[in-house]
Amino acid sequence: MVSAMGIGSLWWSWAWPMFWQVMVLVLLVALVDRLIRSWAWPQVRLALWWVVILKLIIPPTFALGTSLTSAAFDRATVPYTVLRAAGMFDDLVGCGGLLVPALEGSAPTSDWAHARSQWPVAVGVIWLLGVLLLSGLLLIRYRSLRRAYLARPARRTLPSWLDAMARSAARQLGMNRTPEVVLTSAIDCPAVLGVFHPVVLLPTDVPETLSRTDLRHALLHEFAHIRRRDPVIQAMIASLQILYWFVPLVWWVGRRMHGLRELACDATVARTIGDSRDYRQFLVDAARRVVARVRVSALEMALFEREVNLLSRLKALDRDGWRHQRTANLTALLIIAAMVLYILPMGTAVVGCPT
Image (cartoon, rainbow, N blue to C red; front, side, top):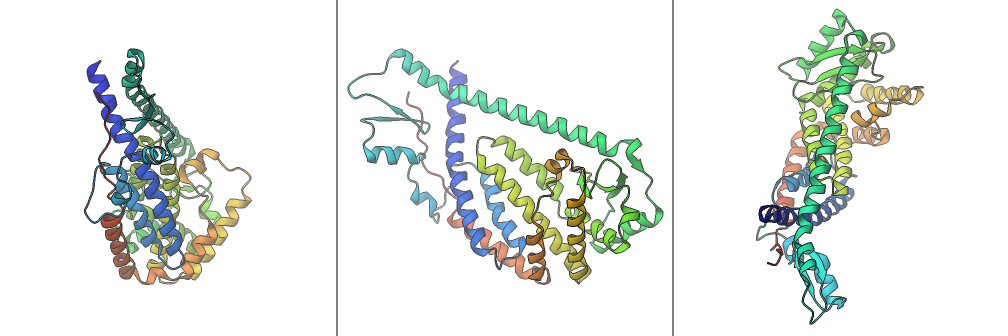
């Protein structure tokens, strides 16, 4: 029992500071992103959001002397300071950041002391059950989708000309290996499925319904996801979303970063082909086909997240940021360095459970 209580207290001393630190950081990053979105390239904005991912990996005690946020939060619990200043309680007992009111002059009963010592264990068990449940659901969904999309009855032999186009597109992007391309009737729009060995899925009617130019654009976009390691990144973000399921804004961050990855892939394709006009028209035509579809799979939308705003993608291509990749990379590095030095370190002394 003692070991369980110790583990529960240790978990809470990690979970509560991470909760409020991540929430504060997400709001700050969202504010900066909004301020720079009118001029910043997608790569720069995406790099900005990577600061949140870094925060989810490092411990909440991480601190630097240059930090502006550590000075703003001199305790691991903001509510403690607010309530104490307001005089709402005669006494506040901190237990891993939890506020426990105690009546002045009265000692806690043994039952109350026992309950107070047990709650970190109970909350930790709830968190663990949530992690296991979400992990199981994600695994089941991925396996069912893989069976449905890659099943032999739904697959069609790849024409030789399309196979040659895929190899040419991979070489154009500087890829050492051509990703596998599968024609399947189980999907309605191009997508990438898989993590370490991703497969590009194309609808079976694509060779007949798309022009050779549009089909090449579709391959370049999906190959750009693979070249940028987006399937691995998405898997990592999904893992962090499951680990931090109790932080609501983490799920919003995942969707936000997905949209920016789409913009970054658009920039990669535009830079590769050297002219964004044909690619812009391809995006418009693709959006029309999606809107015109009678059947839209909710499961497909949940996995591939095709709700990215078309207008944002077209505006990003209008800025021709894809022509200035080195400048974008340098700007991204400077923004990350500033965030890591001044904003990311939020570590403060964590209030522990009294013994």
